[in-house]
Image 1 (cartoon, rainbow, N blue to C red):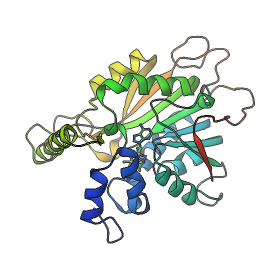
Image 2 (image 1 turned 45 degrees about the horizontal axis):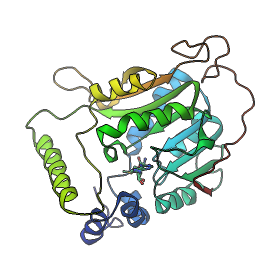
Image 3 (image 1 turned 90 degrees about the vertical axis):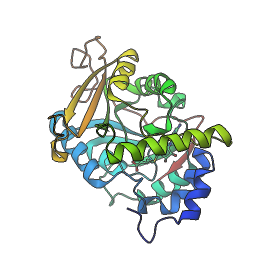
Image 4 (image 1 turned 90 degrees about the horizontal axis):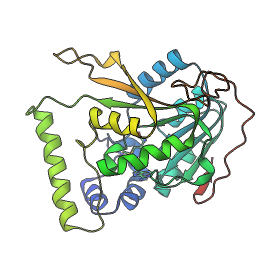
Length: 283
Ligand SMILES: C[S@@+](CC[C@H](N)C(=O)[O-])C[C@H]1O[C@@H](n2cnc3c(N)ncnc32)[C@H](O)[C@@H]1O
């Protein structure tokens, strides 16, 4: 879980009493040594499905990129450019450090932009073929999902794909169920009595509600089992990849009709986004 290079208890406590932005600024130097960073096994499983099903992409967006765990994956999958967006300047600085230079992942450059995922800079609109997000949805209240998904929809080109993994909930009253329920309850108490709030809940992102909100935002939604993580006793996958697609220019569900500019479509030459409103960190 935590390695010797990870944060100590005191550092974690200070982080938990801060805002989300400040908390991650504090955690950033040690973040890659915590279990909060998405493990490579999950990143690899997602990359494998995206590469197999979709082939390559044009431009990629890593939403709530943190220190850039998924940015390397995007740099391999995308031909044009990759942008990481995060609220925390500290996390972005780490990401820019990790992804400085071409040797890290792929030949495609990565830019990092400080912005709130619920209000992306206008310069990012309609610019991406693939958006991914890992390990961050617990930071959004259910009521914020429509705005979040609307922003991702706006950032995608017609036919573009929003992909993210989602884990099956633990069986009710199992040990893990109690741990997560206990964590969420403690955070609710913390947020009721302490300012600023630190929004982080484990049980507020159920597939049913997420699917409904994605559809309401204009996506067509399918899920693909991530088989390497196995199945539960009832046969359902432990992890799935959610694939939410913005309609193509012809209004078709998959963006592969005439004029489509989706992952398999051909689009015009793409210029880099002119990011306003976010403070860019160039890798
Ligand atoms: C647990 S970390 C995950 C980082 C990375 N995606 C990973 O998988 O390792 C969550 C990240 O979400 C970012 N975040 C939280 N709320 C955000 C918001 N409203 N807009 C943008 N980023 C946000 C945090 O700053 C943090 O870097």
